[in-house]
Amino acid sequence: MDFKELVKKLNIDLSLDMLNKYEDYYSKLIEVNEYMNLTTITEHDEVYIKHFYDSLTLNLAIKYLKNITLCDVGAGAGFPSVPLAISRNDIDVTIIDSLNKRINFLNELISYINIDNVKALHYRAEDYAKVKRESFDVVTARAVARLNMLAELCMPLVRVGGLFVAMKSDNKDEIEEGKIAINKLGGEIIDIINLDLPFDMGKRSIVIAKKVKATDKKYPRSFAKIKEKPL
Image 1 (cartoon, rainbow, N blue to C red):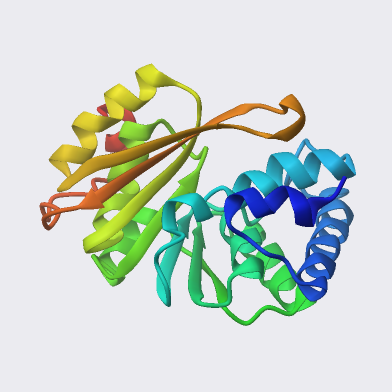
Image 2 (image 1 turned 60 degrees about the horizontal axis):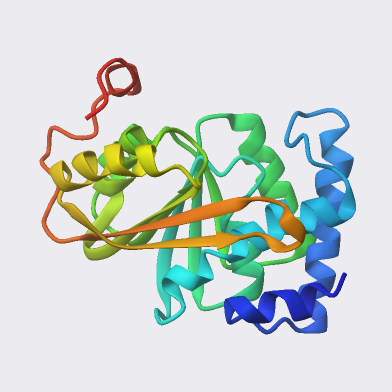
């Protein structure tokens, strides 16, 4: 598999140093996965396509944006933001996750692969919104929750004029349902990119919403309330 060639269709040109960082990422992921449940996908090429390539499809949504701040909500093992940060040093990434052991892994990973444009913080999204409300150019999340719930966790962190980018499987019903929540939170969907992963490894939808007005201060609610009664 020629990963460098594959990702050119995502407008990404990888250097040898970047390719080495992905290989180091893979090694660390598999090593830590032996004692921490980070991923069920462990075969080399599957990790590269279903995690690394899938994460890099985010670039299709932000390819024209330069020198931006990006917040990745609930990144787990670092997807999608760490693979993207490896390929683009003009992005300043903040990862938040509610599980401290995942944050510890991410900080270990960041040091191991030697990237300086990513930091990982132990926060719930609804608490982080109190600290960094409407301050990021882009907020993203990959398969964390249904879109209507995800929007309430992410949209309050997006600055007016910025983007909320949700990386989802190809689920039209979920996207329709999510539109209502996005509108209530001050956003509007401006594009949906549908694509196939290489080697028939899955279908994906990237939902891109622009923040057109400030989010009402009553959002986000506690996660229990979001879960109980999604917008």
